[in-house]
Image 1 (cartoon, rainbow over the protein chains, first blue to last red):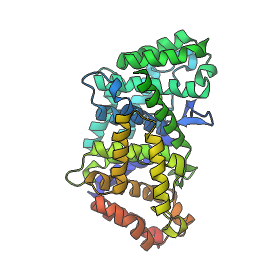
Image 2 (image 1 turned 90 degrees about the horizontal axis):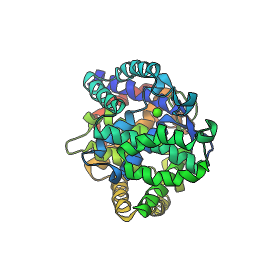
Image 3 (image 1 turned 120 degrees about the horizontal axis):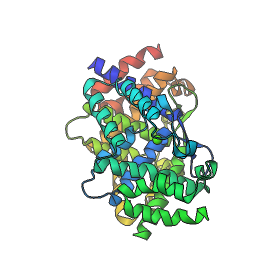
Image 4 (image 1 turned 45 degrees about the vertical axis):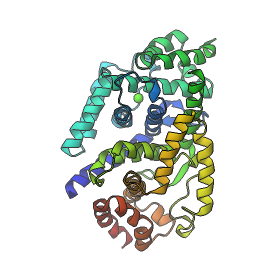
Length: 194
Length: 194
Ligand SMILES: [Ca+2]
C-alpha cells in the first residue's frame, strides 16, 4: 500500500508541472496565456456540456478521462501551437517521438496497472481512431477557436492565419467528431476573417 | 439547436473566468498561487489515480464530474481559504448563501436540462452525504495538503496552522471518505509540525 501511494503521488505531484506549461492561446479576456493544466480542465467541462454533439457509441466519461490526460506529455515537450511554423510543427515525427518518450517517463511514475491503463488511454487519444478519441480531438480543436473568438483574434492574428488554413488545420478535425458543432462555429468565426 | 449551442457556450466561456480565481495554495514549486481552474483539473486527476482509495459504491466518473464543477461558484464568490480567519470563514452561512446565488446565475446560463443536471451534481457535492460526494470532498481536502508538503509549508505557515487544527479542519474530512489515505498522509505531514 505504502509503495503504491508513493508512486501515485509521485505522478500527481509531477502532473502539477503542467500548470506551468504555457499555450499560445490566451484566456477569453486576453489577460494572459492559458496553461495546459487549466486548458485540460476546460476541455473536460466542454465534454460534459457538449455531450449531445457526440456521435453514437461515444462514452463521455472515457472522453473526459482522455482529456484530463491528453496534454501531460507537454511537461517534457511543451505545447506545440497548431498554427506555428506555418502549421508544420504540430504532429511532426520529431514531436511525436519526443511525446512518446515523455509518456514513457511520466506514466512510468505510476504503479504498473495504472501506468498501463492511463498510457493506453493517452495512446488511444493520439491515434484518433476510436469514436471516443475522435470526439475528444474535436473538442481539443474547438476550444482554442472559441478562446480566439472571445478575445478578438488571438493566435489567428499572432500567426497570420487565413480562413482556409483554419478550415484545413482545425475545422476538418472538429467536423470529423462533431460535424454540427463545426457548422455552427464556422458561421461564428467566418466574419472575423473578413 | 442554435439557441442551445449559444447557451452551452455562454456557460463554457463564463467558466473560463475560474482560471483567474486565485487560491491561497501555491503550485508545488511555490512559484505562484494556484488558480481554481487548474486546481479542478488536478483534483479530477487525483480521482482517476486514487480511485482505489474510494469505498464501495463510489462511482469515480461521477466523482470526476463533481470535481470538474465543484468550484465554479468561486467565479462570483472567490476562494475562501480553509485556514483563513482562524478556520471560521470557510462554510459560513454567508459564504453558503453567496455560493447558492452564484450557482443560480452560473448554471442558469445553460439549457434547462443541463442546468438542472449539473446544478444537482454541485448540490450533491456541497451536501457531502452520498458516497460519491464524500470521496470527492476527501480529495478536495487532500490536494492542498500535498501541495503544502511539496512546497515546504505553504498555507500552514501563512496562517500559522497547528497539527491539531489541520487534523480537525482537514484530516477528519479526508478520513471520512478515504481513511487509509489520511493514515498515510498524516504520517507524511506530522514531522513538518515538529
Ligand atoms: Ca495540446
